[in-house]
Structure formats: C-alpha cells, structure tokens
Length: 454
Ligand code: IFM
Image 1 (tube, rainbow, N blue to C red):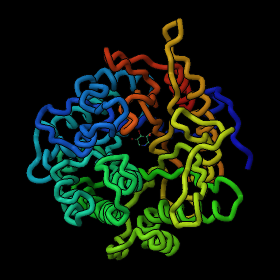
Image 2: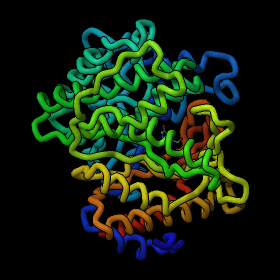
Image 3: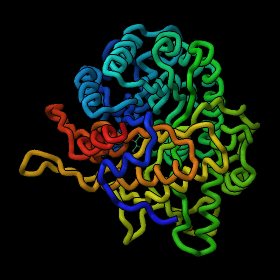
Image 4: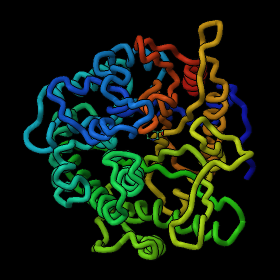
C-alpha cells in the first residue's frame, strides 16, 4: 500500500469517515487538572516523583497544570465550539480514595459528577478512563500494582466511580497504556513510581491485566449497557536496519511488549515468544505467572504516535535502543512520523485479534509552537501530521477495519510527564503563566473536518 498522501483539505479528510464517527479529544487528570491539594485529594505517585530533584524537566509538576479543575466549564465550551462529539478524560483515583482504599471522598466524586453533567450539557459524549497512571501513593506504599491486592482495590475504586456516574456514562476505559505504566514506571524508572526492576514490571503488568478483567465485571454490574475498553498504545515497531540482529531485537520487543498485553486481553494467555524474550533477559526471575483471565472488551482503544525503529546494541537479549533515525521526519519528541504505520497497526490488530470495534483513543504530535506576529499559532506541521494520520485511518476503514472513533491528543497543551511543560501536544495553546487558552490553527482545521464529516 502507498503512504497516505498529505491533503489537509478538511472536506477530503472527512470524506473518508462514516456519518456518526466519534470525533473527539483526549486528556488526562494529572496532566491538566491541577488543584492538587483541593477537596480532599490524596497524593499520587506522580506528586511523589515530581518532588524528586531532577526527575522532571525544569523541576515542574502537575500541581497547577492547566487549572482545569477550576476552568473546566470554559474548557468544555471551547471544546464544544470545535464540534467535538466525544471527550475522553480520566478520573484521578486519589480524588476518589485519597489513600487508595475505603469509602469515597464525596468532594472528589462531586467534581466528576459536575464534569460529566457539563460534558453532557454541551452535547459531548463522555468517555471515562479510570486509570491514567496517578496511583494513590498510599497504595504504592503497599507495593502498588506489584501487589496482587491491587486487583480488589481497583475493583472497589471502579465500583465507587461506576455507581456514581454510571447513570450518565456509557463509555468506560479501565487503563491508559498499561505497558507504559508497567515498563516505563517499574523497569525504566523514568515514570512514576520510578522503579528499575524488570520482575516488578512483569508483576505489575500481570496485575493490570487481572484488574482490567475484574473492573469490567464491576462496571457491568453497575452500568447496564456499558461499553468497556482499554486504551492500549501500540506504535509501528520495525527493525532499524536489515541486520539480522535488529530484526531479532524488533521481533523480541513486539512479543515482549505488545503481544504480552494483547494476547492475554484477547484470551490467549501470555505469548510463547514474549515469554522466551523476557526469560532470556532475566525478567522473570522469581516471578510465577499463570495466564490472566481474558479481558472484557467491547472495543479496543489504540494510542498511536510513531514508528519505533529497534536497533540492537549487542547480541544480549533486550539490549537495544529505539530512537528516531537521522534523516527521518520527526516530531519535537524525536519520534519518527509514520502515518502508514497507523494504517498498518490497525490492519494488524483487526487481522490478529479481530476486536469488535477499535477506537483511536490518542493520536497527535508535539511541535515547537510559537505565536506569530498576528497573535496566532500557525501549527501547519501539526495539521499535516493529523491530516496524514486521519488519511491512514480512513484507508484502514476502507479496508474493513471497524474503526468507530478518533480522540486527538490533546485538547490543550499540558503536563507531559517527565518532560514537564517543555512539549506542547495541544490544539489549544495554554499560557501557563496566565492560563490563557488560544486555539491554534489546528483547532480550527479540526473543527472544519468534524463539521464536514456531518
Ligand atoms: O501525554 C501522553 C499521554 O499521557 C499518554 N500517551 C502519550 C501522550 C504523549 O506522550
């Protein structure tokens, strides 16, 4: 198949999507809410990591972020003005259970109650994600996701949220990017809780899969007709060169990462190739694994951003790097831009796992946005990125993939984890000193795409 062309004409883009397609935006609690000490919110593992000198660019944190906790009405009005039909947001567990267990903090639930009402009042459909990495510190102190008791705790938390919001929210997501949480947070140490121990990361992954299954039943018991999904991030993994060692490293990484989560989610248990790769690298030392129960999935969420070129550093298992290659088009994150990879990943998921539906739960790009002399942000590079990825998504639909929605990442600039506020992914520019919101050109372009789609 050819690479999707760049044709940012909104009408041309919209023509590739069916009427009723779920156009929208995604964001997450810790990245935008701020109000870290308000209304009884407890500490999360990200508050803790942000206090570690050197952990976050410029020593920043999500303490204030976009102050969305106080400004959500204005933000939703802006979102509605762009014609968004869906809004994917996450609930901060430490607002609901400050220490991670026990009865609900009513003030925390009240915030999401108001938020959901406001989302619905603007005519937008809420997509609620239960976990976007901000684990209550109190639970981390008991081992966090490495402790099997987390499965029951997550179910309790899901029950509190579902019983309060389930009369209005139909679309649920259990986890955002479980592989990133497990591996970057517990093996690479660059995300909270900042651990570097592979056997712990494997235990965390296992408990996430079990917690997903458990929470699915809990949500269904509170929300008849709920649609349950998970936002899984899968990029296009390729060998950096044709060298045999790069090809072997890329295959091992795919098996030990994406198949490691997706095979169990679709009821196949852990993949043999992933097991071999993790075992060879010593990641399973002291870990006893049995296959987790199949995930309960009405739809599979896909977060897609880039091509990951895998370059082996040696013949040792898991000794490789994945960096954008010189001479390739890259975003400000150093990520290789690969719209055709989105199409191919969608086709691969459809072919290998046949989910009932796929929703793109994140896609977007960071660029060094600047205000021009006319007071606007002309982010043509973002428009080009989005247009090409939407073109690729339309190709996948034409090829039979049951793709039903697209959530752009992100609505507004926000806290980009260990990179602090140095990277801007939003279609709305945020001035963090004044909290002024300014729609970038991409926002107006996206509005036209949604309007043209009808
Ligand atoms: O900002 C993150 C988001 O929290 C999870 N997916 C990737 C985004 C960009 O890095």
